[in-house]
Length: 296
Image (cartoon, rainbow, N blue to C red; front, side, top):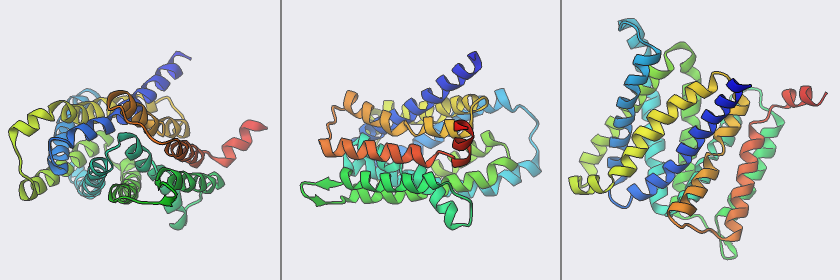
């Protein structure tokens, strides 16, 4: 019982840290560009995993294992670069950490739908979840009496597609390689690509980076290093479906963080949209066969 309680606590702690990361991104966007923010953030995140790797996976460097991890890391890191860039731009352009959290959370619904079109078995709950999410999206993006998608909304929705692609890429490779080393390398690839783009397209100023220091440190050390470690420890003794549902509360915590720290207030219609999207996210994680076994 204690093990289960510890696992549940770690999973919720992960979701809370990830949810409040949207607030850090929102604040960081006021000082530095998307590429600069993500570049420093993910390079810090990559470095923060080194002690975790030394703690959990201390072993001699094997050249063949390194090469086996390199190609998947390059692919996943590139997808992560696109997804995180779109997310950071979306947070900046919508000006709302809460809204960005829920729109990004749509990737949880998109993953099983994409798998369905790839010929994989998908629960009927997924399609009910998609309907709730779409209706929620309608309410969340309503302006007055019209459905209006701002450029930030569009970028976040496209970003959700790339987050879904990233999940599928990780799912394909992670069972055959070290998850921690894979993560460290993909974060490094993402950070490096972001820094290259920042140098080419943004005006990088040390004073601006210093002003965004706390959000960048939170995004790199807490959102990546601490949260990822909590995720690994929490999922050891947790049912995968339960873990997915807990992680889906990330969007709720992004809204809570936006309200508490940034004083963000949505319209009543917007909150209804958030609730419907959250219901859709949870439904998409339910398994029909497991549900039948539990009610028998």
